[in-house]
Length: 99
Image (cartoon, rainbow, N blue to C red):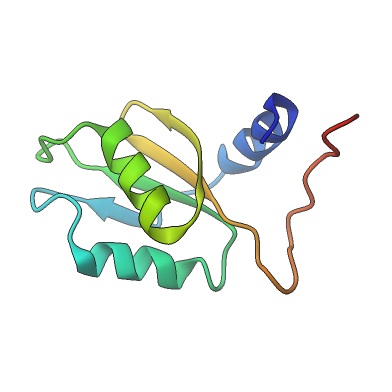
């Protein structure tokens, strides 16, 4: 993903509300499965890491991305933004890499 594409996704994510919250139990298989399921309807997801979660948000973002085959767009503080294009009909059209 190029920096221009990442900037475009960040601009779209700025208006999103977090869809999931990772709490004290950290990243459970149920949370991962729910996030993977959410990618069936959305391509861009924002996740909040609660204050009582002792794990590093960057590590949580990398683990979620690996498990859901998505890409980390950004991690700011305790907010994570992930992107996974729809395989059949992508709704978010990224800027061309050469442009």
